[in-house]
Amino acid sequence: MSTDVDVMVLGAGISGLVTAFRLKERGATVELFEAAPRAGGVIGTRHRNGALVEHGPNSTLDTSPVINELLDALGIRGERIATTPVAATRFIVRNGALVALPASPGAFLTTRAFSFGAKMRLLREPFVARAPADAEESIAAFVRRRLGTEFLDYAVDPFVSGVYAGDPERISVSAAFPRLHALEQKYGSLMKGQVMGARARAKSAEPSKLAAASFSFRRGMQTLTDALASNVARIETRVTVRRIERGTDGAWTVAGARGREPVLRRAKAVVVAMPAHGGVSAAFAAVAGIAISDDRLPDDL
Image 1 (cartoon, rainbow, N blue to C red):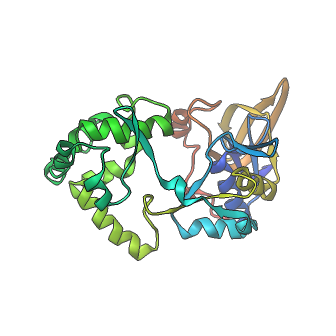
Image 2: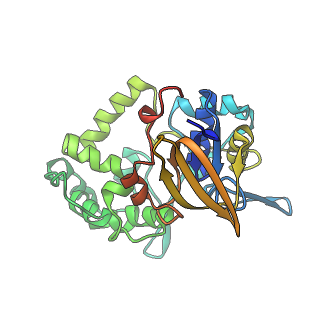
């Protein structure tokens, strides 16, 4: 099999960069195609007039030991900084005033963020029947059914709007919050699922997202993607993928273009790490069998 590289990774956002880095660690030759002028995807930091401005996420959560293992491998763990504790407090506007969202069961009982009726409604949650496993339900419908309208309006809607810039009435709960959907299906209750999930995380040393520490880097979040990009090295930017084909010899041909200049590569495997609206849609990738998981990599990788 005559190929240019072992694996072509399409998309040099955080997913594509980490995938390429880990494959390179395993001895594979890897190259990335990225349509944007630089690697990093939505993660980007700008320094202007002494200020640090994040164009994407301004921090991340320490939810797994794997995170520090990656930072150690990249040599940037010393650049990690914890976010200030005051940033952990979230506020909503209710009755024209800023109200802090409760961060503990005790604070929940006394908070002005939710009415007495909403707090009592929460006690019903363990007794609400689970939805059919194959039901397509919006985030709004899911929260309204399990927790009530007030929690949707004053807790979930602001969060979803901030993270997805979207309408919870139109976003699928199983797609956007698969863990919540899984908790209901497995335990029949979010409360019961949180308790049981905490026990499982205690055994695996993985904290919940609610309790996990938030951190960034001294020079901003782009520190992470820049470190990944420099360790991967073989990244072609401004390349738009036009076609992916598999030959009779089993090798993949990736055809793209940088402006009017054609770009062509052959590889043993292809990983698609692009948004669904990118040059190759996620739906096409799934049908073509292009997006591969770790257990589908060629044996010699």
